[in-house]
Image (tube, rainbow, N blue to C red):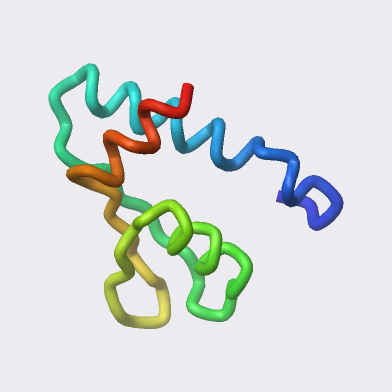
Amino acid sequence: MRPDARGSGAGVRLLARVAAIARERGCHQVAWVVLDWNQSAIEFYDRLGAKPDTGEWLGYTLGGEALGRLADTI
């Protein structure tokens, strides 16, 4: 996302829709990766309740109650 677009809510809306689709399809989690130097993205994912893996590319998983909470925001 462009720096000037941060804080507009687009990222939350996008991931909320992904979470809702995942839940509708019976998925228990969604996963993605982020570079370990992308601190603003890492902080954003942490605020959503996602949990990081380790390594240069950080894998994130959003499941359980956090997936449901995000899906319920739309």
